[in-house]
Length: 73
Image 1 (cartoon, rainbow, N blue to C red):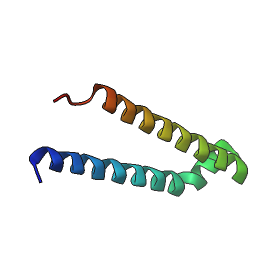
Image 2 (cartoon, helix red, strand yellow):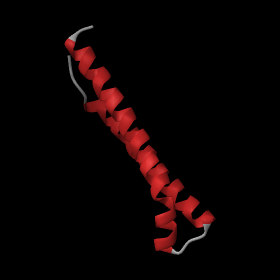
Image 3 (cartoon, rainbow, N blue to C red):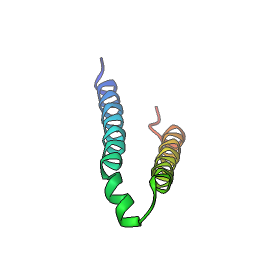
Image 4 (cartoon, rainbow, N blue to C red):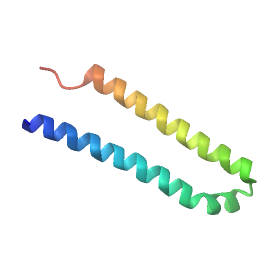
């Protein structure tokens, strides 16, 4: 395995861990979000869905940008 392949693998693992940690944090914080915003379970579900939708959109945008403007050979 070359050095650049190791860095690529490391970046992919760290990105996956960050997404996993981020989704875990929002699920742990959900009761507090629900009480602070005075929403029902359905309202809290909308908050989580909106958050995950934005996270997914930014992930896709970042991936497309990396493909377009990424490392050149």
